[in-house]
Length: 513
Ligand code: KIV
Ligand code: ZN
Image (cartoon, rainbow, N blue to C red):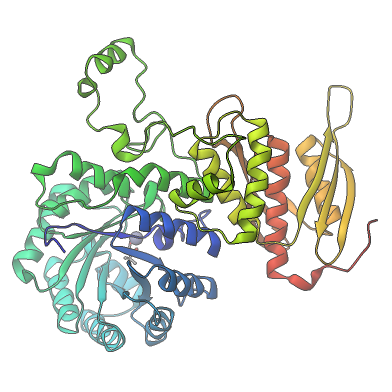
């Protein structure tokens, strides 16, 4: 490995996923992990195994499937967390246990109730235990930027002596300023030299996550922790696409090289945005829809004369160039499979067969199928295929003088075809009510509804994301179609399927009523 290579530690699946509204299913996490592998990140933090069985399973499965990338699991400085993380990583070809403990006086006093000596003892014990179970151990001094510098040195020293190979310095609450954060790294590097790899983990509470991460790199950090689209706790984390392109665009200012395949940045961004249902603002750096758009006449003239007049990066370098239009209704299975694989999706035969049928139906409705259409289909398929309910047909009527109604026919492997109709406040509400009746989800409530266009043009595909609650639980579902009402029905059904997966015995075997 090039010793100047900047190590990209992606925490979309841990810090990103733990933020409210960003929860992902295992299938979705696997799609994100595949996108991160295509980008070439060095470390994927896949979850916090002791936090829930779902996180444990995600770390275990991703570790088994992503053999060429280091997979990290987060653990508090507790025996149980560390053992659980080691267990989740046992089949990883490259596993990392990421142990953390807060070091700042605020956290010591109000959260941990520990004095300095007790914190140091916990670090020694936790890092030492992790090191017994794994050669690659990272220690994070949570709230490092608000820790007394001399105590931070003691904490880092304890972690290195106990065997930590990477030391992460988080600006947990996004409080640091760039010059100050840079000085902290310069001090730590002068104190510890190359005894460990120093890492920066910055939150964006003051909009400074990127500036602070860059200051850290300029002053000796050799790993950055970041997330796709900057998702994460509160205001989020440093966005991977931003730090990668900042260093790529200004290489002389930094003593490191970015060895990612940056042409995958826009695709990774779309996948994360599509899965989380959280749209990227159009003016977002690097991956926003307007990041390379020029509206003002004077700018257009300049860009046409020479792109460097108003563009500091080439759109194709971040994968923002217009997608190819080669697929259409005459394309066959082979072409579709190749495109699906190029886009990084892995589907089994059954899923591919269903996708091919959907592709043909879509190609009848849409003349040109862009990569984004194929991605949307693949994501819709991999996300919603997991449950037992399938939509057979949907009819809705609405108008100025008629009450909106919907009739649905659903198929379930145990209960067969079920048909129901309902009246609602609009066609989507009517479809929701008909689906709730047909699936006997009488308690189901729609708590959030979002629709986004995932591809361009008048025949764009819409992606609908819904949050549905049932009793005390809330789950999110997605649906994709060129028809918004159909996408809504698919999203509602996806949520029902997720509830069904949690509680498979809820259904009665019934005939069509
Ligand atoms: O922000 C933070 O301090 C963290 C640590 C657990 C690394 O996410
Ligand atoms: Zn964090």
